[in-house]
Length: 120
Image (cartoon, rainbow, N blue to C red; front, side, top):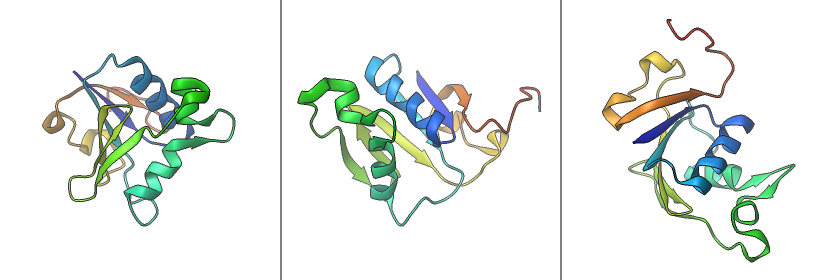
């Protein structure tokens, strides 16, 4: 089962950190709703560091942490984080317009704080 994250701000990023560390899901589909920076490398750099928690590699593996974001594929919009496949969607901001089912996502967490009505 894949997890969907709508938003990759601070809460979305730290949710991604938690789930790539626990590996309860087979993959994560994260929606940014827009392009971020110039490339997926810019997004990976944003995912990799946090102002309070430091680097993702240290969060996952302690002081021995090494490279944890690999296999960045611009054409597919994918990367591997700590061995878990991550797909980045960038088309729509509204969760009901996002192609969750087409990406085999069964659970979605809205981390934007904007979409609070689950019936809308």
